[in-house]
Length: 178
Image (cartoon, rainbow, N blue to C red; front, side, top):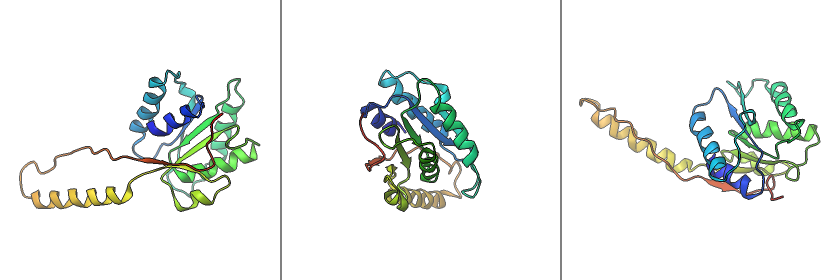
């Protein structure tokens, strides 16, 4: 989220919505990345720009709640001009809602999704996304699992480590500079 927020700021988009799923892990670090990027760029943080949506299943009908929250923010005197979504599925819903509200992407609102799902390039406009190194994540997971299995009969075999892997931004047409 730090990279995505930083990208929006480089595009002169400083009133940025962060859209999160309440039911998906990792939100604490995503919010921290968002806040850190704003702070480092000297952009004021606005609590109301963090939207959390209950989203246990992709089949949940969250469209009305999401549309209401986005519409409320867009009708404020200083409307947001960028949105970061923590899943591409939510990004798809956001694209639909913004289109319905006659918000032009990327002119009025920049949008960055997360995970670079196969449909991201097929949307109109195509969705700029954060790409995770999924192959490297899988390899590291298997490596750690094998290490744990070797140590399972030893005392203190559960040693937790945090690994940070580089993500990248897949630039497409849902972002542009003002």
